[in-house]
Image (cartoon, rainbow, N blue to C red; front, top):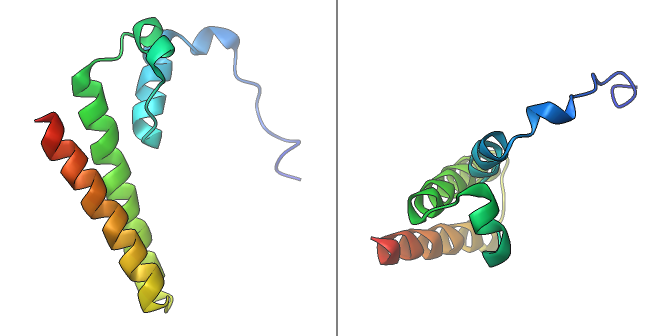
Amino acid sequence: MGLFNRKKIPVSDFSPMNMKETMKALGLVPGDGARSMFGWTEEDDKDGIKVSIEKKKRLLSERISSGCSLREEMQIEIEIDGQNNHLNELG
């Protein structure tokens, strides 16, 4: 039922700056062609990675508290380490 009761969002609310902030909040990074459209910089890359790391840390905490397997825990930790390495490479 909740799907049908959603308020429509005006198209004018989706400016490139709003989309940029939304993408960072979701931990998304645009492709090469879209970077200039959003004014995306390396600093934005770093912010996006930081958000993604925090989301994975919360996911890991939730999964551990719900009793995930050691394999699942290690997989998420490896993903977090990979993103931390990528962040360190960016400077």
